[in-house]
Image (tube, rainbow, N blue to C red; front, side):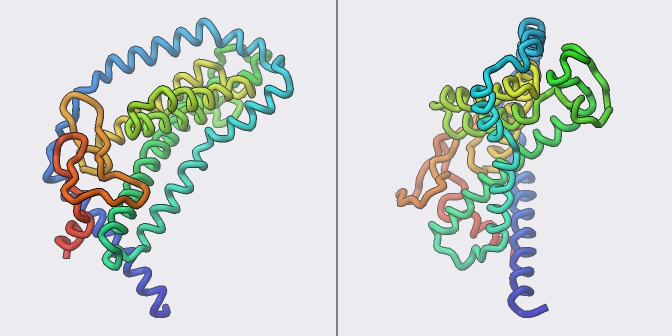
Length: 292
């Protein structure tokens, strides 16, 4: 192996080891003081909404399959592609690979913070979208609900558990799960614009109904599943001090030092949560120095 690839390999391995050391240390020194999220209430509301949509809309959606105008179907078919997880997972994975190959110690303080923030953001996307994607695939093939494309043959509620057939992978919707995760990420990062994020992501999720791939209840169930994974990911990130600050009574709050573009913010910035930002001043460099 030549000198350059060997040096790159050692840097990559060293960056990975340093990162895992930082994560493990923060887990060890930061107690699990998560806010009291009423998960049982959320789960009940999500289940009741899914059941209500199933009772009121699914049969009608199945009967109307194929009756939408061709132009409208083409329109929705274009936008439904944005529900594919690859649009979000691939850039996030490439960002992490680039960060892993970066010489952090050779960067300026501002450059180190910028790469640090992008790394945290990419990892948040991978956790929220990737983990919810794994969960929804296990669920949809385990449940085995027939898609509305086969409404005439199988009806609105035909279950074929573990058939491992795409025809019977309707509940929940994978595209809607991805959109729910994206909404959750945007909700945590931009809580004041939650209604804009909800409108866009819900509309994309709903296109699965119009293209005949899912029933309305499939999309509602998937959207809620993705949202839950995003919130849980945000809570864990807040405990670690990545992107968010911990709070005792509400969802994680984004730190003021979290920016994905160069900033000239003054030193000593205080996070929105009211505590000094643990990464201010290039904490990633300090953490890594302590590991050697």
